[in-house]
Image (cartoon, rainbow, N blue to C red; front, side, top):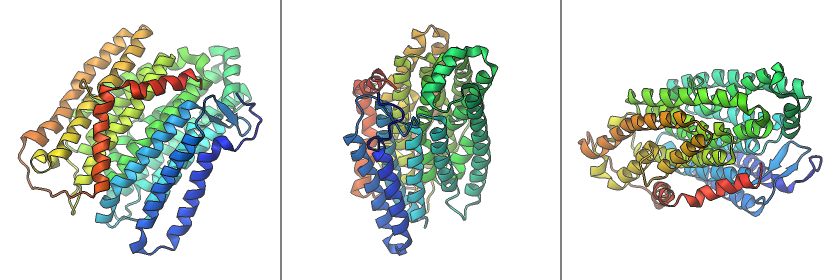
Length: 482
């Protein structure tokens, strides 16, 4: 591992590239006419593809710490960043026609998206509490603005205000926890905090209280119960394209933040944060699945579904083992894949002034577009954890992780609520395949959209049949070290 006082720019080339291109896009967009706005979109997509290339060229074989301990480049970070780029590229692509139909095809959407991506990248590679907080705030401020992006929508404005107020409260709690950690350990460097915590242990009340506030901040960013209040309102109130963005890539950044803080910095306090995550997991799995059953709005249903999936994801983290961390990472990556497909199909169906808001809006989808119905079937069944789809293996992996540390009862609890959760996913399938359509929607997709949504959906099946492709990468990330 490189010395922490070495100033190297090679590990941060992806961040430098994205920042530079975001500024270039911002300047170029100012001089474009309305009919030339497509160029902004294209430039943003090339930025994301360029980031994939730069990150791939500079892949880590061993952790490298630079910028005087504030930045780390490792295998976990590289994999998560690639996931962020690709999921954001899909979001931009799925959103293009949706925004055009509603007169919202503006450069601000894509520029804010790029700056949010930059914030997530900083979060993923943060090696100090300071850089972690800076990345979080850059991401948060961008997404607050995105939620309010549709300025003529009162529901979007209401959702943005709720998101901003609750987000500011969570950021304040996180910052308070950071200040307590700094006061107790006299350092912001995560490695130095880990050493100090191992020496002081859980006898230091300042450390324990600081841990509580940090876990609250993590729980809010994930949307775990009881810090989930913002998710249903934001998903429903925000434009569907923004709901898709918030529901996908940020989960990867939240997972990275969890690993940096808990697995790296506060691993000696595992006995303390383990108990907190058990409670968060229990509440999220139970509340998310039960409340999702009562929803008729499909975006709210997917919001509560997200809450339940966060609970399953936390099962892997609370195990506190490398296998558990790899399972949680696998779960996060595959969940992003599933939710991107589900929201993407909703976006593609929201055409010609029609807004797919309620489950009943999908009635008879199989009769007029059997391919999109099949892809939605794959997404719903995978989220439900049906065998042969990737969601099944993701849940199996986190259940194995908690069983390996003796928490059999927690795995049984998860299995029971997984069965309960199948109900609301099957309801969507029933509406698509067995109900008669209220109106026939003509969905003519450009080739790029057809290829993208097909690949997105089929990847759910392919990774379900061959999960070792992705799981081996996740395991390798933790074998190489954080």
